[in-house]
Amino acid sequence: MQRKNNIVLRLHRQRKPEQVLLPLFREDNGEALRVILEKQDNVTAEFIYRTEKKVRSGWLKLEIEQDGCRRSDNLEEELPVILEVETDIRPEAMTAMYLLNDWWTRPAFINDFSEIPELTQAIYGKLRNGYFFLLPMPGKQFKTQVKPGRENTLIFGMSACKGGISKLDEPVYAYAEADSLQEAVHACMAWAAEYHGIRLKEERNMPEMLKYLGWCSWDAFYTEISEATDGQLTVKKVPSQKKAAAHVRNLGTICEELTGMYKEEEIEVNRCRIKGDCAQLEYLTGITLEDKLDHLLEEGRTEELEKLFFSYIQKVKNIHEKKPFEKTPEFVRVFGNVNLRSDLKCTEISNIDFVPANIILSENKVSVIDYEWTFAFPVPSQFLVYRMIFYYLELNDKRGILKERDFYEKAGILPEDIEVYVEMEHNFQQYILGEHTAMRNMYAQISPGRVEVEDYYREKKQESLEMLQIFWDNGKSFNEADSVRYLFRNGKIQTEFELPENTTMLRLDPGEMSKGLKIVKLTWEDESQVKFHTDGCEVSSGEFYFGGDDPQIIVDSVPENRKSIKIEMEILDRKTTEKKFWKVYAEQKRAMEQMSQELAQKKALVDQVEGSKAWKVYRAIKRV
Image (tube, rainbow, N blue to C red; front, side, top):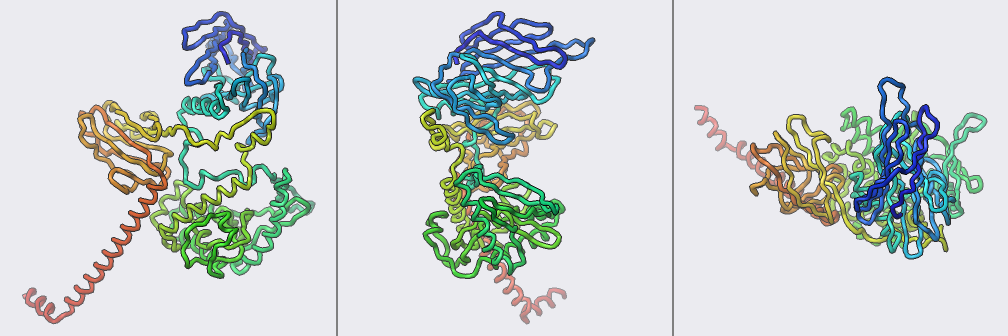
């Protein structure tokens, strides 16, 4: 999108009719082109073209001058800014992703700008000699969308979803061209992420298994709630694609099988009836076991929480431990040929989603919902228990206090077991993505012959950008205002931070980073070592493993007259660091058990000595 000065700005205000502002003159300093628009009434505006890191962006700046003696007449709420921008883009074909509803987009395959749907959120395009990507920008206040345009003209709409705003200074779009579509998309997304100070999706480090989660049903069926003549509510799952029909029909068979299995533990299964390709399920009321556990946690009743949680863990064991486990070809296809213990047990059918969030507690019964991931082959019961604990314990920071209660260990799950179960979960999520086509992988299928779209997510990551946030306390405690952010590049950071005046404490937050971090250097300006502590575990010299979602490095006391702190850090491979952690954990556990045994032996010896005649004579003499 080359720099043009043909700009038309249309404003919709609270009290005035539509205002149209046209270009007046332009200024080009080589780095940016400013198109100054004519001033109308009390409105000044300009449009700015910029080029940074292979990305061409357009920015709009406007201000409605205020008159304290008159009633305000600022921007209205619904789409107050319409911007027409002349462009030299000559696409051969385009895919416009437009907003179908509040949470879902759909593709439109088009050839010219007039075919662009309303509420378009992104445009992928093929040029004669390459590809382009156009991203209407979400700014700090305003969100941009692309509207139906005209030949050689793109039209953007901007809204903040509230009226009364008198100033705007934000990006309208980001645009990039490249030899591949992947490169163009990555350039725009990286630019937008840097503008907002956030990371791209593939750069965010989450618990390992969450990296592979996708839409289990990938928009294959929709759910609706209807009311019968007797007032009974029913949940209907209706396939929207042929591939999903068999999946929905299978819910009826699963329901029958699980009903017989769960009966012994007085657990009911959300009843399912199949009518054609539609699954009808009863609408259940009550609270989930997850919510119940959280209520107990909030009230500080952790003993009661643990007792309740483990009562359901025992139910899972009772249901799923009917015979010794043996791997089957079906198991290996879904969970991989993992190295499991030989003493595990199982049953013929396995609902691996028997987790607290899928257990409904009502006044007179306990029910299981969302049982679609039930397999007709054996899965170790201990893996089901692991998932129960993981999906409750690990995915919410407020539950971190429960980790000290050693739920895994109490459930008989050893550190080496966890390594295997993490691998199983990884393989299971890969199986899901293999069975179900995620939207990000559908472009080649949904745009045959129109746009040659490469799968952005299949290529390996190009550059790892992480964020280190430094907080300082100079009498106001730690707060966002007194903080600064630095980017990790390729997993590394090396910087020197000048201390603000009167700084007494520091906190370094690597944020949502990998769980492994190496502190290569942490010194004051004179190279003396900084004394600090972390909420992580040191697994090797300078290498730390963080189990929680909010890693922190605390400097409790900053010596007087210090001017700066030198920081050098490196993000480590998560799996390698986690293995080191479990090794350290196992060694410390063995050492504590050995110490306990030695203490018990010494106590027994002391008891023996104190019971001897010689000791009694010595005590008598001592008293004299």
